[in-house]
Amino acid sequence: ANVGGGYMSDYDVLPMIHKPTKSDNSQENDGAFHSSRAELPVDFSNDEEINIYNGFVPSLMSGSASKWETLAFELLENGAQHIDERMWTDMLAMLDLQIENRGLFKSVDIVLNPIPLEKKWSEHSCDARRVYIAVHFSHHTFRESGVNIVNRAQIAKKWLEDWRSACQS
Image 1 (cartoon, helix red, strand yellow):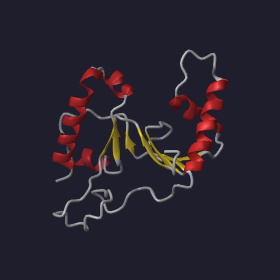
Image 2 (cartoon, one colour):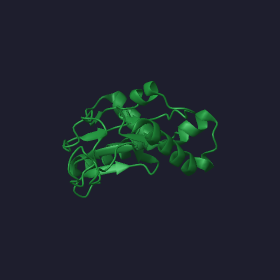
Image 3 (tube, helix red, strand yellow):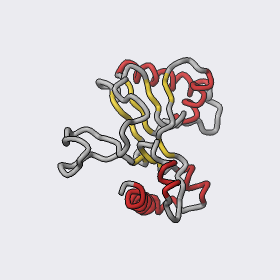
Image 4 (cartoon, one colour):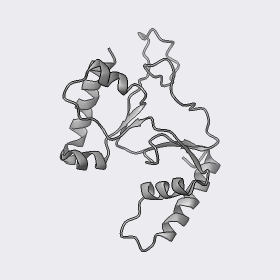
């Protein structure tokens, strides 16, 4: 993302928005991603700052090249301050930086995490999830739910199929 700026996503973050086809009535297929809702809850055109779309969890982010470079050095400095920690991750460093409130990034919460492993979708559960643009099938969610992470790909595929079938019709 540093070369020219742009987006960074974890491999286990999948979209809950879709790319329209010629059959979509919403608008012409201009190659851009569009939500099934009228408006997205955040302005994605602002790349002059680092935007984190999953609270402090760096699973989906965007920013300009200069902001990515600044953040990279801040993360390195933060890691050096925690050299004696048994484990220090980018997520813990981002939380640390957010607590310090140094204005390095803007944080919104539009990535669904943890995942509700619902058996049946209802109108209420669909409506409650309409604010999200992506879903994060994180290690934490699987650990907390007691579901074997080895099956993550199959679970993610089934979850998205069930959600689309129930909520995007």
